[in-house]
Length: 388
Image (cartoon, rainbow, N blue to C red):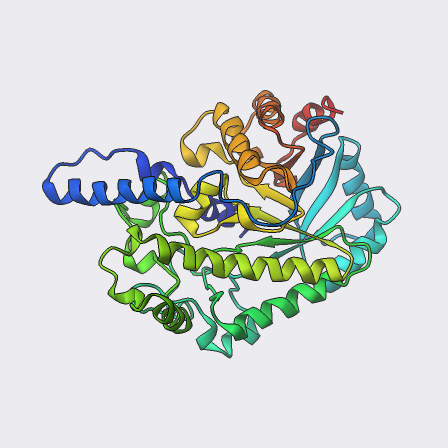
């Protein structure tokens, strides 16, 4: 499931700007409208769009690079687990973002407390497939432009079952889940994943997998039309979002949905901090891509650590693009929080990994996060060790 998560989770902004070899007036107009929307959003969310929170200097930048990795919970004996982690710690990996339940996290935090490593509790946030509490409340789920509820309609893959950030019940449920993890003594951070809407646009290299040609924003993949969202939006702007002629071009409608996720995340930050831990998040590569393709404005979040997934091959880009992505993210956030550049190890030879790490550091990252631990070969670990 983790590999599928990453394959579907990282969507390419290139689908917005790369031309398709098609002709005809209708196609031209669709592409024109979509191109205008990208330009308008880029202008509206420029570098001057900074949150009001205090900017702090990044003390680790380009000097003491931290290395981390994503992993599922490791179902091993205590001795086996310690031996397993020691192998990666010896290479310099000291942050472990572990997808596990609270009981499992408590166990691994206690077991490794003298190892000098950091355990982060990785949780799926708004995408909650199989959540028994949520499934008893169909009204909590996100709704697309066709009026389909994600409780029943699951876009792209069966495990896409999205809660709405506009549902108060869903928000309170998520806060309870985060609190249960945040109160674990010794935890380095609560690590959010899927803290966004479902993908509006897939990358070019994934569209054929689902039999799609996404020349514009298709209504079945355009989420955020929860009844509460429509009600609030109409109260402010005197129009139901369903009545917008070109919702993909409407700045107010985009910002309205972005703000709903941002307010949720910032509430979760407060919960984490009240319990003496940090909040981190796996996010899309840089804010402009995130805002446009998954309605995720992580540059506005009060995070402690961002882990942008700079998976260049999903974007049909070379390794120089990683530096470009990091630079954009660091510049827009102003160094307010740590930046761990996420690298997809299966797409990188050892020498390519070395270059990807170097490009990340040159772009301003103060940490590197590898997806995933099981993809790291001994040769990869030798490369990581060389940066110590």
